[in-house]
Image (cartoon, rainbow over all chains, first blue to last red; front, side, top):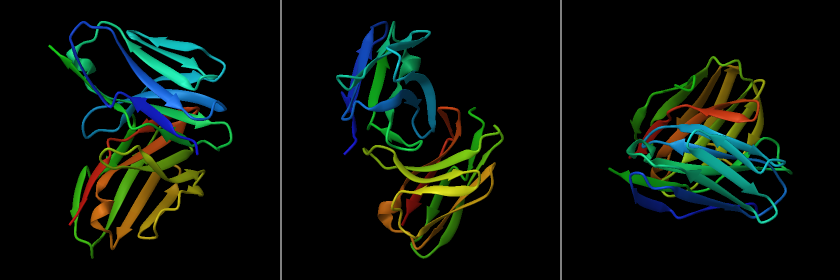
Length: 113
Length: 110
């Protein structure tokens, strides 16, 4: 069964810290992987998309890496700010599916002022 | 704003009611999705529409009935729901490899 797991489920850090969120997936045959942000009671906003042939993607203070062979991705957030507080979700499109994303349960991040 | 609009934002209904959720996008996308997000569970794909045709039904109970009259609009008709159907229902449209989500409808079934 294709599954996506995110650890930790929740994380609280002081403002200014650099932090890493983890995502693992059970099947290395993936098409791409996306990181999303979700604010409470809201929809999801796409942050970064990494194709299977890529190792990383960067956008501002965010950097996502992909290690397909080990089934892992990380989202690195530099110099965290209270406005970064949200739930971060990882989603994988596996090769054997039509466009269908499998989501992890998310990491709930709180950045304390 | 993502360009995907969902109404209503909140809905409370009894188990015998019939209601509909609406999703609208004017991004020029041809694929639209319904997802269910329950507390402490991953997002669950419910339905996929491509060019108005349903291409995926992820074993969703028949008390949920989707409708896609055109590429810009997607509905989810609800009838005789159960309390365990209470959740955030999210609509998304796809442009290339990216999904654009609406803000969702928070549904409570009493």
